[in-house]
Amino acid sequence: MVSRAERGPLADWFWTIDRFFLAMFIFLMGIGFMLSFAASPAVAERIGLEPFHFVKRHAAFMIPSIAVMLGLSFLTPRQVRRTAILLLIISLAMMVLVLFVGQEVKGGRRWIWIAGLSIQPSEFMKPAFVVVCAWLFAEHARQPEIPGNLFAIILFGIVAALLVAQPDLGQTILTTAVWGGMFFMAGMPWIWIMLLGIGGAGGLLSAYYVFPHVALRIDKFMTGEGDTFQIDTAREAIIRGSWFGQGPGEGIVKRIIPDAHTDFIFSVAAEEFGIVFCMALVALFTVLVLRGLSHAYRERNDFNRFAVAGLVLQMGIQSIINIGVNLELLPAKGMTLPLISYGGSSMVAICVTAGFILALTRHRPEKRAQDRSLFRVPHGMPAE
Image (cartoon, rainbow, N blue to C red; front, side):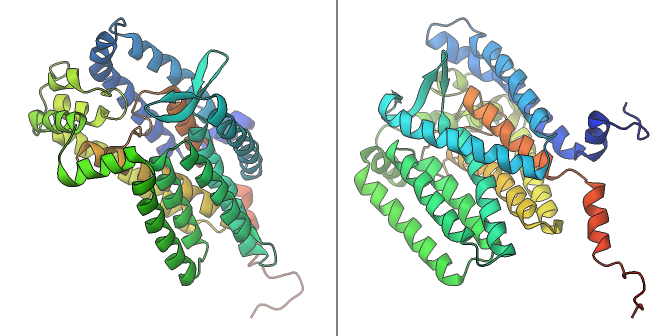
C-alpha cells in the first residue's frame, strides 16, 4: 500500500486515479480471459490448431494491453491530447495504406501486416479521433472565432470516407454515433442535428444499394431467409443456457459457432454461465458508461468533459452493437465486445481508450484549487 505521506509519480498516481474505473477495466479483462477458455478451444480445433492456441495468445495480448492502459493513465490532459494527435495521424496514414496493401478478409481490407503482426488501424483511430474532436469542440467553445467545429466536421468526413472505403459499415456507424453525441454535448444547433440525422439515414440507404454484403445482411435480418447459421446457433446457445447456464466447459452449441471467441462470445457466456451472468455483464458496462457520463457532467473543463463522455460512449455503443447482434436485435456485424472478446488490435486499442479515461478522470488537487481561486475575493476588495 502506498502511503498518502509519500510524494512521487507513483504515489500521486495511486491517490488520484479513479480506482473504481481501474478495477472495472481489469475485472472485465479477467472475465474475458475466463471466457476465452470456454469459447476458443473449439474454434482452434476446428481450424487445426492446438486447443489452447487462442487462450495463450489472449494472455499474451493482455500483458501489453494492461501496460498500455496503465502507462497512459499517468498522462496529464495536455499529454493525452498530444498523444491522441500523434496516434490519429499514424492510424489515418495506415488506414490509407491498408486500402492498397492490406489483407482482404471477408470482402474487406481492414488489416495490415507489420513486423509479423496483423494490425487493424481503425481500432486505434477510434479513441484518438474522440480525443482530438473533443479538443476541437472545446477550443470552439472557449474561443468561438476558432473554427473548431468546422475542423471536427472535416475530420469526421475524412474518417468516415476511409472506413467506407474498406468497407466497414459497423465502425462507420459507431464513429458517427459517438461523434454526433459529442457534437450534441458541444451545443450543436438543431439544424445540424436534423442534417446529421438525414445524412445518416441517407448513408445507410446508400450502403444498402452500393454494398451487396450490407444488403444481404439487412435482408437476412428483416426476412429471416438465407444463410443465418451464425445468428441461429448464437440464439440456440443463449436459449440452451437458460437462467443459470450449463456450467463451465459444458457448452455444446458453442462448438459450432464460427466466431465464438470474438463476435459471439456473449452467446458462449450465456450457454455456459446463463442469462443471469449475461445480465450482470450488461450491468457492468452500463455502470461504467453512467459513471463516465456522471464524471463528464461534473467536469468544468470542456476538453475533459467532451473527451470522457465520448470515450465511454464509444465503449458503450460498441457493447450495444455486439450484444444486439448476439440477441438478434441488430443485423449481423463483426464487432468485438470491449475488453472481453479475443483480438490483439481490439484489446490494445480498447486499453488505449481505458488509459485515456483513467488519465482524464484523475482527481487533480491543483485543478480544484485553481477552481476555488476563481471565487476568492481579491485582497483589498470588500466582500459583497
